[in-house]
Structures are given as C-alpha cells and as structure tokens.
Length: 225
Ligand code: CA
Image (cartoon, rainbow, N blue to C red; front, side, top):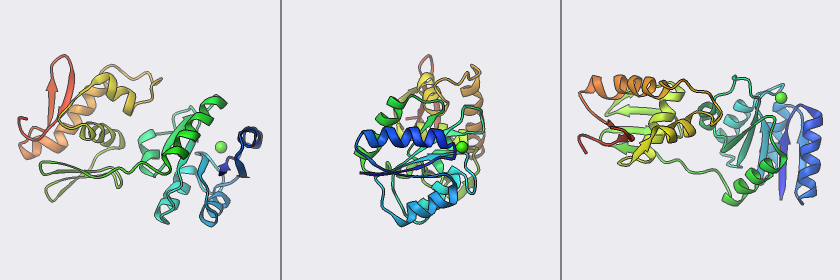
C-alpha cells in the first residue's frame, strides 16, 4: 500500500507521513505541486493526499492534470478553511474526497481507507432527464443541442437533484451535499440557486424540470412527472 502525500507545510506532512507509516502504509512525501504531479505520474499509488494550496502547481491543477493523463488514483484533497475553496470546483477537477484543515488524524485515516477500499474514483456517469443532459465529469449541461452555462454551485445543485431524479430531495440534503455541513448558509441560498437554475434550464425552453414539492423539497423530473 503506497500513498503519496503532497503537502508544503512540512510539519503537517511529516505528522501525516509518520501516522500513515504507523498504519502500515508506505509513504512518499513531497512539498510542491509540480514534483507531486511528476511522482504521481511516475509511480502507481493506492491513494494521494493532496494539499490544495501548494507552491509550483496548486492541488486543483495537479488533480486536473492527473485525470487528463488518465491516472485514476483516488485523491483526498486537503483544504484550508478560509473560503478560497469550492467543493464543487475540487470535485470537478477529479478529486474524490476532501478534508478541511485542521482535521482529525482519525478522520483522515478513515477517509483514506474508504477511498482505497473503493479502489478508484467514483464513476459519475452523465445523466439524461428528457432532453436535459447533465455530465458531472465535464460539468456541462445541455438542453437538446443547446449548451447551458451554470456556475459551480448551480451545477452541483442540479447534478445532485439529477442523481436522484424522480425522488424528492430535501433542502437539508441539498445543503449538506452542496454546501459544507458547517457552512452558515443564508437560509434562502437554496431558493436563490433553484430560481437561477429554472431561469437557465427551464423557463427559456418552456419546460418544468425542477418541481417544488411543498413542505418537502425538490424533485427533478421531465414534464409533470
Ligand atoms: Ca499548503
């Protein structure tokens, strides 16, 4: 079991390294993005712990380039708390999971084990709801042939509804899935995003795909279903 840790805070990197080694992993450490990318391309790893803010090349870009090179090693992204971070963005670049600093070491281990057990990134197939096409892998959305531009959060809301199309998705569920669980989201944040989505994917096409289920949440379905 070989794991790569790419983290420029040397103390943190060595704490993580020692901890993982104590658990029986072989651990390679490096402190900048370019070197990390090179190592990940050269060597097969079971998982990569990748810091977001790195010198050389940031975590988003490292991840993106790995996926572009068709390296599917599971990536656990480490992020600072301070808002430069966008979960949807990271997942779009191909990270499989993320952890906000400061994190508990126990949680890091658990997440890493889960990633390794799954043996690779979760495949996120494209979704088709009527003529609405949602592709989480490329973060693109089309209605028929028409390409629709969505923000990262709008896309995340739509993709989450789409994954469970036909079912009622509660507001709490959306909040937890799309916004950080600890994020103090304004209470109307979901309404704002749903409204924006309707203005982009439904209203211009005279459709109703996002249905409000009174007192429960939302359901994505083609037509009146
Ligand atoms: Ca850093």
